[in-house]
Length: 404
Image (cartoon, rainbow, N blue to C red; front, side):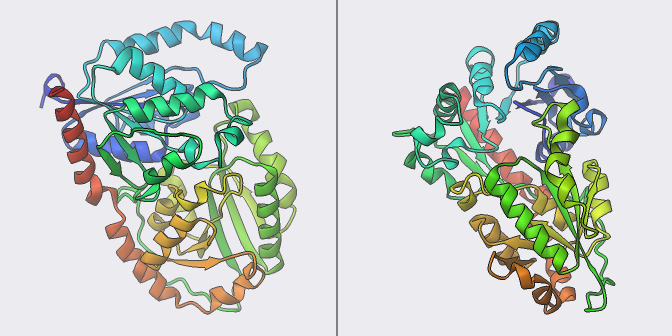
């Protein structure tokens, strides 16, 4: 089919795009849509060539918003031509639907209000501010008022919502920082699923026994605060005392590129003095799955900054671990993620009370049985299998917009 006749799906990422966005775009492209990715970041903050497999066109702002100062203001002035090109590129398109991903809600508010208001606009709040705080007063201590109001705007003015947490998480939006919020009736719960494209054969010959040292993989985005830092430090200390190796593959792309490594080392550097804690360079989505598949287990460890979010959140690392064929060690403070992993039977849960004896618990499991359950889970927790729901949702939202 000629591109001129294809329905255009635009993904607007208000920060560095995630692998979940790649997977969604890839499936739309495979199913006959023309796909665009607008990324509010520098081109070198993600694997541009890799993402071209999912998108017919990628347009980067070549600018990313960080904490305002003289240096960032100068950077903004320097990047004005790129930002203008970025904006004009959006305005000349006639999309069938736009999926706006947070990021920064204030960006999505501007993009919707001044560029895509006449087009079907679907809000994908990757992380929901309303789940992070107990009250508006608490939120305002660390979050700008205009960002809170922008989240409200996006919820109320979008034509549909995609959300990746617990199925009922939108039922709790009005409990804390928003009151009388009116959500669009079209909503889709769409989790960060696995992809057959990334899954590697499961190594069923691995053996866990008491004469073998355990190796655990931890992959993910990292941001630190006092509570999280203390929790991570205590946990990794307990693992090293049990002679369990932990291999870290960390990203922190909310930090300027020239400061990212320094930020990661400021936390992980000291604890990797232990012979059981290993800090590796981050890798691309395909490479990381193949890399960690050689280990025995993987790790889901909750951050402690936002206690309300723990009731609802999930993350893409679950899919990466399943794609690598690894059972998942998971703490039970993340209620939805904990339930998800228990339902599939692919994990070993723990808490602060029993993490000091976690090695004993691991050696009591039927490892081959866990691997069989992972094989089954990958078939069900799969983006290809769930894509028809996403496609049908986009079509419904687009058609309803045309009839207004």
